Image (cartoon, rainbow, N blue to C red; front, side):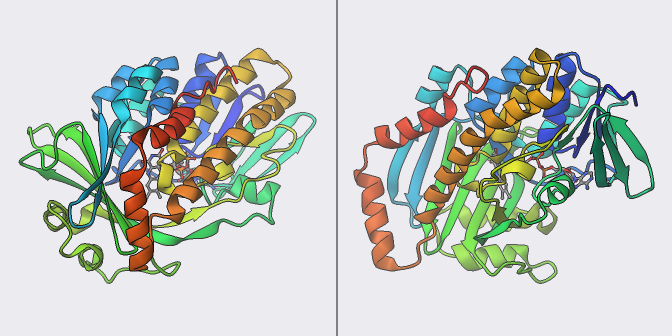
Length: 391
Ligand SMILES: Cc1cc2nc3c(=O)[nH]c(=O)nc-3n(C[C@H](O)[C@H](O)[C@H](O)COP(=O)(O)OP(=O)(O)OC[C@H]3O[C@@H](n4cnc5c(N)ncnc54)[C@H](O)[C@@H]3O)c2cc1C
C-alpha cells in the first residue's frame, strides 16, 4: 500500500466503521483482520440511537435499521414477573432523531462489509507489532508480511496487540461475571413487539429483545444472561443450555422456553472484562479505537456504540487536520473523557444488578419501583443525546 494510507488493525465493528468513515473523509485505508473468514456469530447487539446517529452520518442508518428491529420500551421485571419499572426509550429516540435497534452482529458486519466493497479488508492477517518513525509506521504480521502507512489505528479489541506494544503494563480486568448469549427463531413474537425485557433475579440478569423477522417469517429473538462466575470458567461440552437454566429455572416465561428452544450451537459464553480508563491512547502516528482503548462492562450496552462514535470523530479530525499526529491526539482528547464517563456509568449500573443478598435485592427492587422513570431517562438522555461530532 502507499505510505499515505491509514492502516487499521482489526475488522470488528469499530475497525470496519472507521474504514468507512475514513474513506468517506477521502483517506486511503486498509483493514487487516486476524480471522480467516467472517463467521456468522450467533449473537445480537443493541445499537442505541447515539450509534444510529453515527450511522446516519455515514449514510447507513436505513440499512442498519432495516437489518434489525427497533424497540420503544424497556420493561424491567423481578425474576417472577413483577414489573419493577418501564422506560420509554421511544421518547429519547424521538429527541435524538434515530431509533434504538437490536440486530444480529453478523448482519451488521455484512452491511459494513458491503459498504466497503472488495479489496479493503485483508483477512488472515494477524498483526504482531509495529515500528513507528518520522516516516510513518511499519506493521508486521504473523505470516511475515509487512505494510507501511501514514498512521496506524489499533481496533483489535480487548486483547489488542497494538495496545500491548504501546502500554505493556495495561491488563484487562475481570468484571466478576460471565455472559451467555443466544439467538433463536420462534413462531410467535414471545414478548410484545417493540419491547425489550430485562429480568432481575438472585445474582443474575436476563434480557430479551427482538432482532426482527427471519426470512421464513418467524421471530428472531436474542436473549442474554449475565451472572457472577469465576474467571475462565467453562461449560461442559454441550452444556451451555444447562448452565443457563441453572440460573433461571422457575423465572417468568418466556425465559425457560426461549433457552430450551435455542440450539447449543447458537449459545455463546463470554467472560466480561473491562479496562481502567487509559491515561493515553497513542503515541506518534499510532492510536487505539473501540475495545482496545476502552473495553467496558456491558451494563449500558454501549461498547460497540462508543466504537462507532470513535470512528466518526477520528475521521472528522483526520479530514480537518493534515498533520496526522496532531489529529490523532485531538481525537484522543475528545474521546477519552466521553468513553471514560460511559465506562464508569456501566460499572455503576452493574454494581446493583447482580445482588445475591435477599434483603439487598428487596431494597433495590423497591427503589426501582419508586424512582420516577424521568431519573433514568435523564441519565440516558445525556448518553444518547451527546453531540459527539460537535463536542
Ligand atoms: C456479552 C456482551 C454483550 C454486548 N452487548 C453490546 C450491546 O448490546 N451493544 C453494544 O454497543 N456493545 C455491546 N457489547 C460490547 C461490544 O461487543 C464491543 O464493545 C465491540 O464489539 C467492540 O468492537 P471492536 O471493533 O472495538 O472490537 P472487537 O469486536 O473485539 O473486534 C476486534 C477485531 O480485531 C481482530 N483482531 C484481534 N487481534 C488482532 C490482531 N493481532 N491482528 C488482526 N486482527 C486482530 C479480532 O479478530 C476482531 O475481529 C457487548 C459485549 C459483550 C461481551
